[in-house]
Length: 139
Image (tube, rainbow, N blue to C red; front, side, top):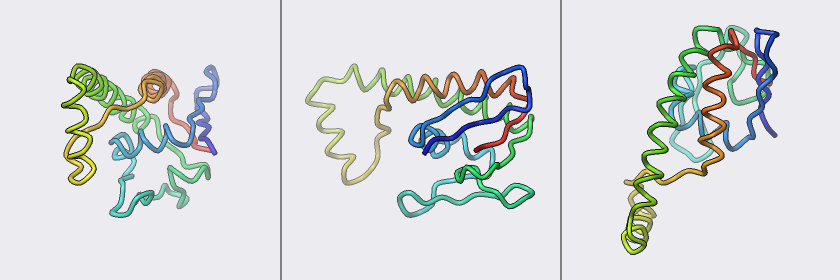
C-alpha cells in the first residue's frame, strides 16, 4: 500500500510514495510538521488529526495546507542533507569499524544508520513537489 498525494495545484501531477519510504520520511522528522511522531512501540505512531479527524498515515484523505506543505518541504530538505552526510560517513568507515558500530547499535541504538539512496531521492523529489503543490490530500 503506497501513498498518493493529490495536489491542490492542478498544473502538477500527483506524487506517489511507497509505504516504506513515506513511513521512513515521516518517522525521520518530516511528520513532526503535522504533529506526527513515532511512538514507544515499533510501527506505532501518534498524530494530531486534521479538522475531519483523518490521519497522515491512513490514506484517508488527510489534508495538508499550503503552509504545512512548504514546512514539510523544508524539513525534507534538511533530512536529505543530513542523511546523505550519514551515508557518506558510513561509506568512509573501515569495514571493521562499520561492523563494530553495527554490533553496538544492535543493543544500544546509538548510531544513525545509512538509508537506501532511493529513499533519499524520493524525499528530495517530494520537497520540490511539495513547495509548488499549494497543499495536498493524502490518499
